Length: 201
Image (cartoon, one colour):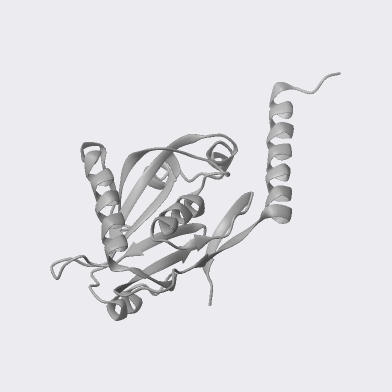
């Protein structure tokens, strides 16, 4: 007697979860960010790590601005808050609609940022000021370009817009953050499955 369709689906899901767990165990860990050297006009950028989320926090470009974080994720899970356990599988097993998130902390200095962000880990990455400003401008323009489709989650402090990137386990928030740090002339170690980032001491 063959198994029912529901039982077959459960077996496929279980098999997929086991495959991901094994891949993460053997290949997935944190890549190391190494800041650039020889910087003449440094700016203080931060890697933010919070549970399964990894983002980049960029400094003000002028006196009227504050630190801002950009992050990447799955549109349904991260932006719309569809966080039921069974949505983990479609979120990570195949490409889904990505989102570019933005949030601020009411902090214009590194000291104020650290005082306000007490729920997450911040690691400082010194980079060239002009590179940090250029990346912030580019990401802000991307965010603004989809502003009519923005979704806000006040409880998290984020504003999300659709992003022309797919989210799944080979291209997650740590992978996209790694790309952003490379734009700042940082070197980032390669991994087949990247589960996070950390900064070289």
